[in-house]
Figure 1 (cartoon, helix red, strand yellow):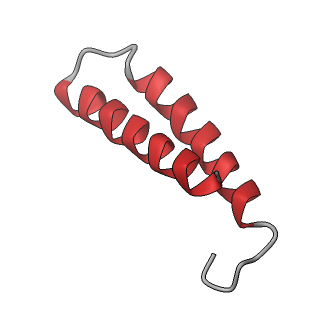
Figure 2 (figure 1 turned 45 degrees about the horizontal axis):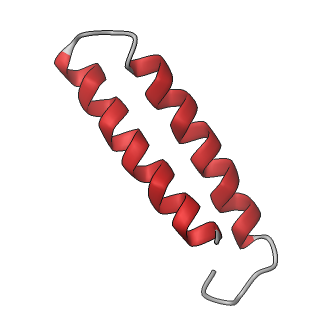
Amino acid sequence: MARNSLSAAEFCKLCATHCEACATECEKFKDPHCQECAAICRSCANACRQMAS
């Protein structure tokens, strides 16, 4: 991103996709650490989407 790579947006979209998948999986479990992971992954996915646009 620092060098305006043409691939940066693609990597950010890929990261967002994987973070969303992790969040969805972690939300299936009620353990506090799983819920915390899900929230962090959703936040990361949102940040990645913003960087991709």
